[in-house]
Length: 268
Image 1 (cartoon, rainbow, N blue to C red):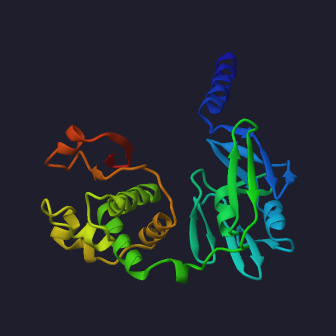
Image 2: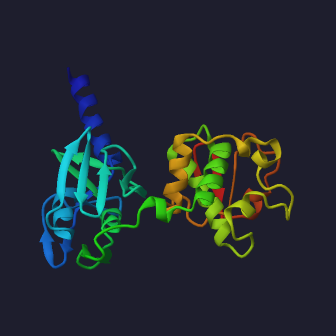
């Protein structure tokens, strides 16, 4: 009996030691305070989707349909499914680093992602531990308008070819490297040209073996859109490799380690 009690106590202690931190913070939406269910998870402010949506767009219709929260206004349709790491807003994919949460029947989402969906602006008052939101256009541009078809086409294919067995986060990480290269003066300035760059030899094995042309999975296409909408999990990384299959390790010897996600190691 004593052994079972001790085991239970240890389990409780370990749970609180490794569980994501959730701390209460303040939220102001157009000078209106939201006091309930505003929580900080690992530096990300989460807010109740119904309360904040109604403040950003009075009259918003918020419902629960098919296991997800649904917000509708005349110009916006937004869905948030607990457990997913993203929301959908007018066909846009908005990343939620700590996942969509359901707490005591209330759907919680990251304030920056929700504000983006409504075209609102967010600032952070560190001394007051408060997120401040100012309403804006009321909606986000639709995915059909925002996502360039060529960018989605090639980004989803390199993601799929390089990380088909990885998690969604691992796929996003590969997409981040491609977009970081596009933004870097050391590499070409389009997704297509980065993928097929031969300045220092073939950059990506899928180009050499032809798998770059394989039809991407739905998750790879999702990862591409998340990346194009700003999801970032590996900072300024410009390189990655799988140490178990790599034949050269010059990256680890010459670059700065950033993170390991799944089978890939990322460097800047």
